[in-house]
Length: 238
Image (tube, rainbow, N blue to C red; front, side):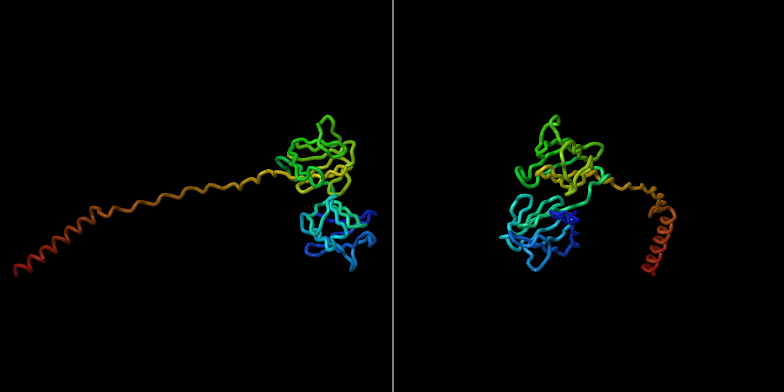
């Protein structure tokens, strides 16, 4: 989730609540601060990211070096340029604990190889953010004990727009940046345990009903039939 915009001079601006937009002014000779009636673009929060609406394509809107004409989906850690106005999108700071997962995938965002996928359990990168062997790694992302962690090593890296000072846990939707290379973190979560069902005790057996043709019932039927026959015979011979 994107929480703030950080301008080039370090100023931080909170992103409005979902449904509201932050107006941005910029251009070759325009304002370098957000707001104003001359807004050339707007940013609207839509967790877990945000939308960039470009109203004036001539401003030269760029997201992570990729030109944008009218609309772009933004992630925490993206760099947006609108003419003279440049800002980074900040998400949550590095977390100390995240829910356990079963595996992870790093998806390249922007630049050469955009959309390509790197799958765990260990991925290593050089100082330019390009995949390399573990022996040549300046930064590594590894999976162990249900947790995905990044170890910056000797290279500067950013997580959701925040500089990494040491090892940090990675959560779904995080964006890891090494030099100009950016990678979105996707994970396969642990399955949710199914609720335990309690076996109900078996119901007591119902007593079996007496047979329709029991001895007592049959005797009364025989007697009734005999009486009926006697009455009929008497009527005939009278």
